[in-house]
Length: 216
Image 1 (tube, rainbow, N blue to C red):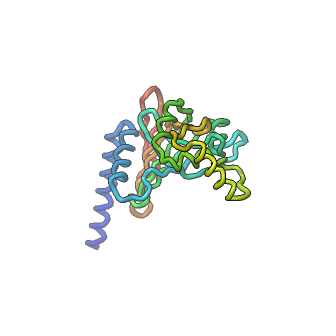
Image 2: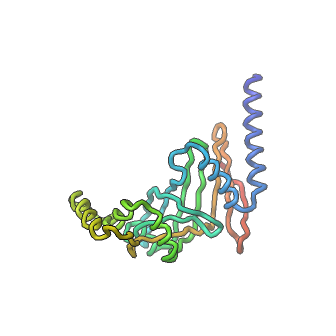
Image 3: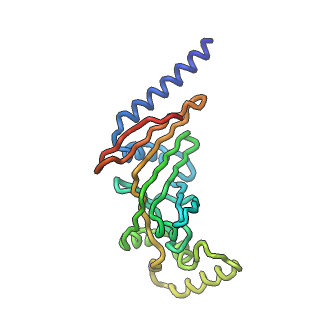
């Protein structure tokens, strides 16, 4: 009985602790920063990995994992080939959802919002920071298209390496950046016996957020 009471008390303290955190954070980006920095400062293998869900104009959904490259009050940024499936769907239907699942921290962050294409300067800055071999591969990959023979891809890489021999690899026009502008951000913290803690932030006007706790 004593052990059960201690366990229940600790669980209650944990719930109260996170209630306090959520109630004190009026801006979800600030709370995201706290959680994200904890993961970055750990040995977590892929802290920037996030599931990106998109939807075609025909309402057919698709999802894949991409890497977060930067974030701010403006939104969450990633880069890709605009001719890929996700690129085409975001062009047709500029709305997306993101999910960060940091399983070792028992946490999830869900984000929903509209998507905008970043300017060329931003895309150039990111592309120039990539490893040269990755830049070459980006040029040669017809992302999401059918590849009949792997050697075709390898041959294209060799030709592109010759083309850019002793020169800086420029960014192809189809390599772009997208920013997901959040309208809804939900934070999920695992609790004992499915008593998970969920708080949803919804943008209501300007930069004001409405905070609501959800049933687990």
